[in-house]
Length: 229
Image (cartoon, rainbow, N blue to C red; front, side, top):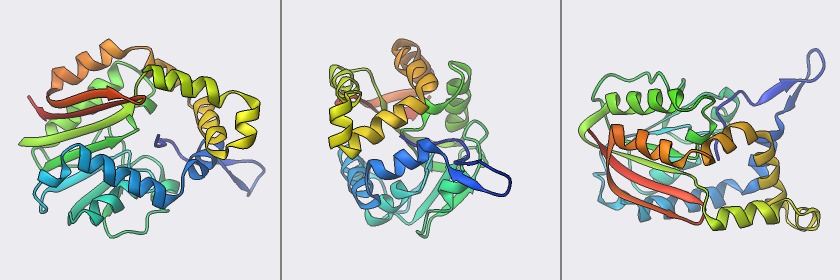
């Protein structure tokens, strides 16, 4: 899960407090744990076959651990885009990061080889319009032989079980990770449930913009790799 909103809120005049969603996200897993997760995911979804000089953009990049994973895999032309200046400020790698809305990407037509989203689409506030607009922008920016890669939550039996377990008070007391997951779910509930509740619509919009090369649903995730129409 990646945030797409500003992550600090005013408490009293002149004082800022951490947004509770981001606070939970930051304790859900360490940066190194997230980087290793992203490396395994990228390898599993075909990154070893991408040219190392490919121009890659991660959308909804958050604090940038996906960008670090790409760097460790040997990619050198990497950029990130996110709507949260607070999360972008935490990135310490060499990739270029841009504060921008993924519904209006700041890139020329046919200028990128790979666009990646790891847990950002389910934060879009209005379906289907925001998703269609985001996919239209991605389709515009991708080169003809480019690739998209999405990994988003999906309502599988495993995810249903995790939701049930994470809401049990004894589990939340014992497991900081489960407590963080339940907290994130609580604060993103409207967009999260909107996303999980419309699987056929989401797949239809995706296929209207991209031709699937690889797709599977497992462990509470939608894994999609495709090419632009």
